[in-house]
Image: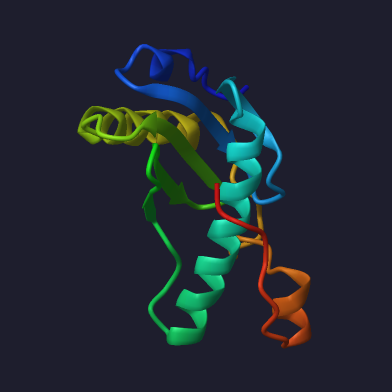
Length: 137
């Protein structure tokens, strides 16, 4: 059973949060747009993990992006990604700390796959092409 994310909604500025596996489907989600957040985080993680492998620097473990009205912070560990969308200008440190604590719970509660690869490569990566994937929030 996936940890509940309701506690993230209590933090200042959080509008949505999602926990997802490598398939991009939310294992837990709260807030308006949480499913979209999950899908886009899956796409971003896949792209950034591929970039890290190609550069020889490893896979992504943290992600932060900012738009004129939104900040997204996310953690990736093993086959799970956990992220939250916050109103722009809100201090993200409380959300980042809470995400880290929730990720520890995720790793204790949810099974790890037998596959040592933490992210499923996109079809373009397996085919050896360099096509772009997905969009940003």
